[in-house]
Image (cartoon, rainbow, N blue to C red; front, top):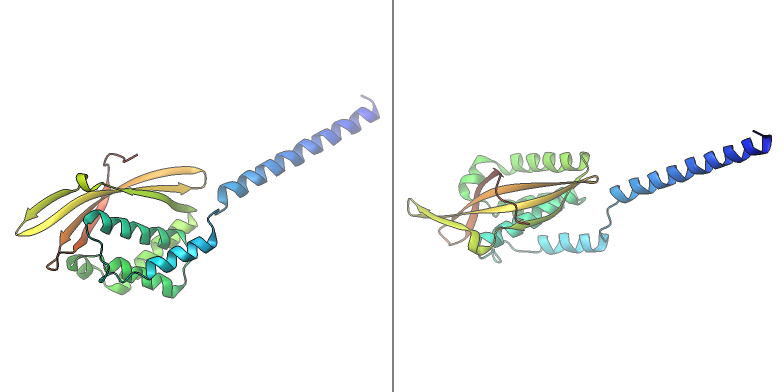
Length: 194
């Protein structure tokens, strides 16, 4: 091979390597960038925290879990100040049944929630969307003169370029004021709502 041919080959190899590095860098950027409008994120945080939970309490078990899910998405996905984080925790706890509240002090709950949210961030996870059972799919039961409701929340989580789904089974109990409160939840293998 001539000197000119070697020079052209080296130039071609260098150009291919540079182009591959640019493509790989762009792919990394796209898969890790948060494309949400930060102003909309701030507005969403403000609107969720502006709700007076007791005065504007959700009317049905489905609405309770939707509001809970909106709160959890902000806690896990968004950068919050310590004050905002504590406000979110208070809003979430306002949805809990007295029995569930008795199992976790406010301090313990905030610590646990912070650890879970931090774990999501370290693992580059985001809750991208959720769905809640429809009103017609809620199972109502009465036991010991108390009303219970069971329904599902389906959470779609994005981790880097991977998408995961989880299903949570929620149990709610109606309190003496007629408000549905979250009594507990667990991971479920419930049918996906897609």
